Structures are given as structure tokens and as C-alpha cells.
Image (tube, rainbow over all chains, first blue to last red; front, top):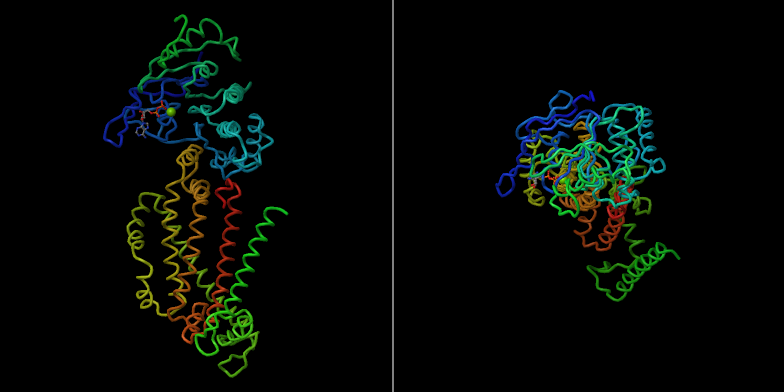
Length: 262
Length: 283
Ligand SMILES: Nc1ncnc2c1ncn2[C@@H]1O[C@H](COP(=O)(O)OP(=O)(O)O)[C@@H](O)[C@H]1O
Ligand SMILES: [Mg+2]
């Protein structure tokens, strides 16, 4: 692979001072290189610093020390080359679905007919053409996630950050959205976006990732490439290697597993 | 019959019952405030003699002579009189709402706009907020006398304080996730306020608007009691000096109709702006 490095975390550290005066190190000396087009899943127990790491990369927060470099430029704040999908609903309730999808393009001065065309295209790809004029309150949780995903893809960012985006959804909806997300990421003829996807769901990580980075207490505890073929399904994910990785991941999350360890 | 139609019927019945009760009370309780002025004037008095007597407050114009110039009371003069005084009251209210609402809103937004604007407005405004409105009456009288501007500014002050506090509070309660999302999409600060903060605070501003509308009516009438020569407040005070109970009551009725209409208007406007919101936020 001759992939270019897209994101580089260099000894990144983020400390918080809690209300009671205690210092919490949310991210502790993280160094990580993500090549362009890679789909990385960040996994780890609750409170290990996954969201903080994403916030830092998004530019919504700044590291206490260290630096984050994006395409050879240090991050100093949010930018249009990065898009983010949150676990909680971030779709603006006061904008119709299509206007939500267009919003990033509008902020960047793309002309109305052009941005409408792009927004319609992405709405079609997430299967929401029929609700483009609806208000968000008329949509289900899964549909709102589709809107949020269409919006960040329409905005054209090369780096997509997703923080447990499907955490609050039911199993079936979640699996449908995996397909939607992967189809957008792996569009034939288009360059793949670089994705950082936070999850605490081992199966979700195995379904989506090229590489799974495990975090623990603010540090990177493991970094596992997933070589399984795409498109993946329950059978391709049932190989001995994948099952071994699954046991390893479950152990990282502090879960006792039955069966063989690799 | 639909539920809405039923509700309407009930409201109408209550209205008719209240009007009937008033009429019965006027027959039962026949004490007079002064000879010829019943404490409880019945409708047959209110809509004839009382209404005609409003012609006394007609200031002239449109070729309709004033009672002071020796003309007889006419329904035309009475109607013009009522409308003109109502127009003055409404004008004061509108000026007060525009000035007070505009200033309170702008200053409220300034608190969150930037550190600089916050430092600029926070202290002076908190100082102004701490001053009770009624304590300012003598001051406003000395500063402005009984002028239209003074009365409007007095009401504007009362409205502005409410709108300012509501705006600051509403902006503070905008969910961070919307602000983050807009910043991630590349919204400028101006775009953030226009596209996110303003719509997000609208449901909270709706209740603030109804509150300051009520405060606005009170403050304008209060200002008119204090030496104005026009407005419904002036008519009430003038009538009170001669114990014209029926006139005071009639003007109060007109006021009830007007304030209700203004509330309806505000509610309709906000309902239109809040089409996107769940019904619980619109009512
Ligand atoms: N704004 C903050 N103030 C104080 N502590 C914080 C803040 N944000 C996160 N933390 C702390 O940092 C740690 C990591 O949090 P987070 O990144 O949200 O974990 P995760 O997303 O992996 O569950 C937690 O202990 C959390 O309490
Ligand atoms: Mg988290």
C-alpha cells in the first residue's frame, strides 16, 4: 500500500480538571497514524477517552500537550475537511431534512441549485428521498441517523468522525445502517474517506473496520488489523482468525469469554 | 360534533352566563356611586348612555365637533374618541415593544456573542435589572414629563428587562450538540446565530413574549395614568375623578378585548414560526 498518512496523533494528552479539583487524564500520550481511506474503529470501555480523542480531532477541544496533524497541517479548530456524527441527535429540528443535508455546503458558499443537487444525491443514497421535505420530528431515530450521515458525506469532508452513532438504535436498524455507511464509504470510482468510528460493540467493529484500535484508561492498548474480505457477512466473520480477534477484544473490554484464546 | 366545536360552545356558554350574571347583579344591587351612577351598570346603560358619553373625550378632527365646543354627544364622536385613544395606547405599546424588545434581545444576545460584548453589557444591564420598574416612575416623570416618548420609554424599560433576562437564559440553554454541529459544518459566528441560536431559542422566547406583552400593557396604562392627555389609561383616570364607574367599566372591557387580541396575535405568529417544533413546544 502506498497510502498517504491522513491523520497523525503525536503524543497527544488531554487533562481535565474536575469540579472537585482532581485531575483526570482523559487521553494519555496517544500516538497514532491513520492512512488515507482507512476505516478505523476505536473500541474500549466507557470512560477510556474515545470521545475525547474524537473531539480533539474534530477541533472542538484542544490537547493539553502534543499535537494532531491532518494532511501535514496541525489542527487548530473545526474545518470542513472533517465531519462528525454524534450518538445524540444533532440534526437541526428547525430545518427540513433536505436543508439539514445542505447545511455544510451552504456554510461554504456553494450555490443553491448545486447544493440541492448534491443533497438530493446523498439523500437518495441513504434511502430518504421520500422525506426530503419533512421536519426531523416526523422521522424515526434510524432515519435521523441517515440524515446526519448524508449531511456529513454531502459536505465532502475527507475525514469522518463517528462517536457511537448507532449506540441508541435497535439491532435491525443498526445492521441496516452499517450497510448504508459502508456503501457510502466504499463507492466504486470515489476515493474512500478516512473514518474514525467509536463503538463499544465488538461485532460492529468487526463488521466495519480495516483496523481496530483498542483504548484503555486514555492509552492505546492494542492495534489490530482486520483482514477479512469485504463485503463482510456473518459467514466471512466466522473464520477462526476473526473469532480469535473477537475473544481478544472481549477480553480487553473486561468480559470473560468461553472458548479458545488465540 | 367535533371536540373543538364542543369547546367553542362551552366557552360561548360561559361568556353568555357571565354577561347574564352581570345583568342580574345590576338589577339586584342597585346602589349608586353618585346619583344616576349605579355601582353595577347594566348592559342597557353601558351600550347607550355610557358609550355616548365617551364623546366627551373626543379631541376633534374629521369635521366632527367636540362636546367641549358645545356639540351634542353622537355615536360617531364616541366611536372616534374610543378609536383615537386606543390608537394612542397601541402606539405607545408598539414603540415600547419595539424599543424594549429590540434592546433587550440585542443586549441578551451580546452576552453570549463574544467575551468583549459580554464584558461590555453584563454589568450595566445587571444594574438596570436590579432597579424595580415602579421605583423608576418619579425619575421618568422628571426626565421626560408627561410626554409620549417618556411613557413609551417607561414601558420599554419594563419590557426590555424581561426580554433581556429571557434571551440570556434561552441562549444558555441551547443544546451544545447543535452548536458543535454547526461549527463542524463550518458555520461562521453570524451564521451560527442566524441558523442555530435564533431558531433554537424561539420556543423559550415565545413564553417571554407573552410575558412582556402583559407587562407592556400594564406599563403603558400605568404611564398613561400619570398625567397623559391621551390613551385609554387617561380616559380611565379622568372618569375615575368624577366617579363615572360605567365609563371605567366600559373602557376596561375594551382593554380586555384588545389585550386578548394581542395575545392571540402573538400566539399565532409564534405558532407559525414554530411549525417545526413538536406540538408541546408550540402551545
Ligand atoms: N469536559 C470534561 N470535564 C471533565 N472530565 C471529562 C470531560 N470530558 C471527559 N472527561 C473525563 O475524561 C474521561 C474520558 O471521557 P470520554 O472521552 O468521554 O470517554 P469515552 O467516550 O471513552 O466513554 C472520563 O473519565 C470523563 O469523566
Ligand atoms: Mg463516549
